[in-house]
Structures are given as structure tokens and as C-alpha cells.
Amino acid sequence: MTENATQLHLAALPPFSLSAVVLSHGWIRLPPFGYDRDSGTLTYVTRLGSDTITGLQIAEVRDGVDVTAGATLTAQEQAELAAQVTWMLGLNQDLVPFYTQARGEPKLAHVIGSARGRILRSSTLFEDTVKTILTTNTSWAGTIRMVTALVDRYGTPQPADPARRAFPTPSQLSAVPADELRAAGLGYRAPFVADLARGVANGGIELAALRDGDLTTPEVRTQLLAIKGIGAYAATNLLMLLGHYDFVPIDSWAKQMVSREWHDGAPVGKGEVKAAFETWGKWQGLAYWFWAWERE
Figure 1 (cartoon, rainbow, N blue to C red):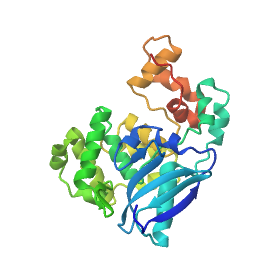
Figure 2 (figure 1 turned 90 degrees about the vertical axis):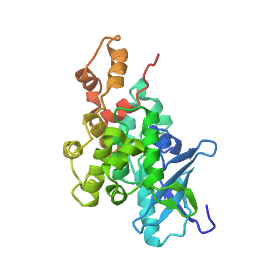
Figure 3 (figure 1 turned 135 degrees about the vertical axis):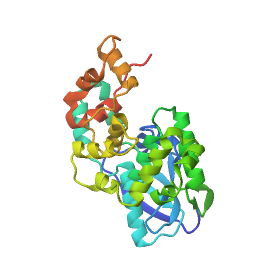
Figure 4 (figure 1 turned 45 degrees about the horizontal axis):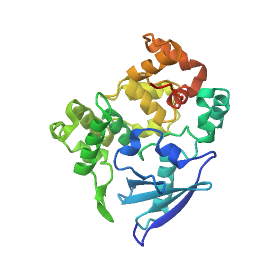
């Protein structure tokens, strides 16, 4: 960080663990995120509404996190950055009701002591939606390659370290033809990303309303499913990132795990997976996500 850095302290609702959020899923492996396991420092390159691009270093402290931005920020920019990081780390999420319910389940007892339950998010729902589209029908290596290509080719570099770039904005990606995105390695997902970028840039797709509005889970899910490239599984993962845990993301892995856990290895379908977690109500997605599965 430069000598012009800005520092913020942000409190978190307890219990909180930065490492638990960082390692909650694979997002930490996708740029512009980074993580130094030795120091426990989370890094990210963000863009503020003023178009300021800055790298962030985020470290856990006793009651939350300290955030260091590699630029001198105005009071308005600091407030925006505080809101961004609060969202990304779920600092204001109250998971005590989930922990209370989990306390009676041995397979979830570990979440309480380790403060697990928050799921790492990007700074914008647009970034999370694009990344989710790039997880479909590919390996994690493929997702990393595609996300890295988008950031390296179209993201704006931070002045203090031009080698690191912010995730491209809807306006930046809307200017890129689908054929060019396909050539960048996105394959069949290219027109989906291009359509999403254009829709968000021209106001036809209002992602902010899905994140910040008071829509019910079914209403949010319906609107997510209306986005080209977002199917049932991808929509459920995005619901989880949005803090709606009413659905379980069902794929072949989920069926395999539920089969081993409750059906002695016999083949199961979506119905059996849903039934396994429906008693968890609005927390069923988290119960599934953090279940201590038996693995071979």
C-alpha cells in the first residue's frame, strides 16, 4: 500500500471469523480476490462510484476487520467502501438463529465454534452473477481461467499496482462483442455474459433491486431465472450469496452426498435432497452448505 492509504475499522456482528468467510467457497480463487494464508490478509481490487480504483487489504481484528485502501479517499468514498466491505463479508449478518438451530445437530456443531455461515461475496451482484455463469458446465480450473481472462483483458488496473485489475463493469463488458468474449475462452457462455452486461448497463436488468430491495425469495428467484445463462442451480447459488437460504443447490454432487448420508448409497433425485433439508426452513441452504459430509 502507498503512503496515501486510507484505513477503516469495521465492526462485525459476533461471532465472526474472516478466514471462515474467505474459505467459505471457491470465490477466493477468482480475481480480483487474493488471500495470504500466513498473515490471514484478504486482498481485493475494487471500483468506487467515483471511478476510483483501489486495492484493499483486509485483516481481522478483535471485533471485526481493519481495511486499508491504497488511495486517499474522500468521506463519501470511505462510506461507500465501508458498505462494500460490509456486504462482501456479511459483517452485519445475524446468524445467531441459525446457530441456535444448528446446536442440536452434530453434523453442524462445528459451525458455531468456527463462526462459519457467512459466504464470501464480490463487491457487486453483477460480478457475482458473471462468475456464477462461468461456473456452469466446467471445472474450477476452467472457471478460474475464464474469470482471469475477463479481468486481465477488460478490467481497469489500479494505479498503485497496474498488474492487478478490478473486475470489469457492465459498461466495459457491454462494449465487447460476444464473439470476442468467446475467443477469450468463455465458449457458449459468451452471449450470456454479453447480454447480462448490456442489460445492466442500459437499465433493462436491475440487479440492485435484487440485492437491496425487499423482494421475497421466490420473487428474487424468478427474476434470477429470467437472466439468460442462469438455470435453477445457478439461481440457487446466487440466492445463497444474496442471503436467501430457502433453497438447496441441487446437483449431482448433492445427490451423491445425500445418497451416502441417508440412503445407503442408493440413487436419489431432487425430491430426496429437498426432503433431507426442508426441516431447516429458511436456513436449509446454509445447513446443506456447511453439513459435515462423510467423504470416501
